[in-house]
Amino acid sequence: MTKNIAVIEHPLVAHYLTILRDKQTPSSEFKQNIDRLSYILASIFYSTLKTEKVSVATPLKITTGEKVAHSVILLPILRAGLGLTRGFIDLFPNIRISHIGLYRDEESLKPIKYYFKFPPIKDKKDAKIIILDPMIATGGSVIFTLEYMLNMGFKDISVISLLAAPEGLKAIENRFNIKERKNFHLYTCSIDEKLNEKGYIVPGLGDAGDRIFGTL
Ligand code: PRP
Ligand code: URA
Image (tube, rainbow, N blue to C red; front, side, top):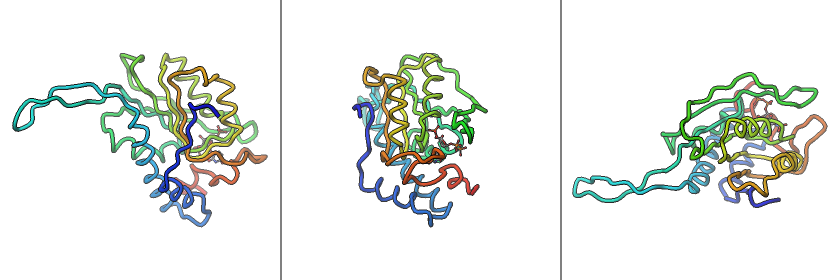
C-alpha cells in the first residue's frame, strides 16, 4: 500500500463501523451511524486544509485570524455517497456540492453514468475535490469519477470511503500510478478481505445504498 492510501484508525470509527456491518442493524440506525462516521471523517480530512491569514475586527480590536484557503467541492457518488455528506457539509458550510450518479451494471459490474451536475469553478488549480463513495469494491466507480475529474482539469483530489476491497485499491493504484501523484489521497476505514463472485465486499456490510435508503 502506498502512503497516498490511509486506513483511518480511531476507536469510534471502529465502533460505528461494527454497527454498520451488523446485518441486524435497521436502516434508521444505519443512517444515524453513517452520519456519525461522516463527522469524524470530515474532521480528519479538514485537518489537512491550508489556511490564509485574514484581518478580523473583534469587539475590542482588529487582529489576525485565519480562513480556509481552498475552494472545496464535495462530490458524492449517488446514491450511497450521499450517506457520507452530512458531516462534511455541517462542518464546512462554504463547501460546494456537486453530484455524479453511477450504478454498477449487475452483470459486468461496470459503472454506468446517469447524472452529473457540477458548480462553475474559476480556479481549478486551487480547488480540492472530495469524492465520497462508502464502498470501493472493484474500484470501477471511483476510477470513473477520478478520470472525470482529471479530464476536467482538477489536480487535487481525495477519495473518502468506509470499506475497500484489496482488488479495488489495486485497480485504482494500477490505473493512476498514485505513488507518483502528489495531490491524491484515499482514506478508508477498513481494507476488507476480498470481493465475492458477485462483486460484494467480504465481510463488508452488504449493499450500502439499499441499507441507507431502506430499499432492501
Ligand atoms: C455501489 C456503491 C459504490 C459502488 C462500488 O453503488 O455505492 O458506488 O457500488 O462498486 P465498484 O467499486 O465495484 O464500482 P451501486 O451501483 O450499488 O449504486 P447505489 O449507490 O445507487 O446503490
Ligand atoms: N456496493 C455495495 O454497496 N456493497 C458492496 O459490497 C459492493 C458494492
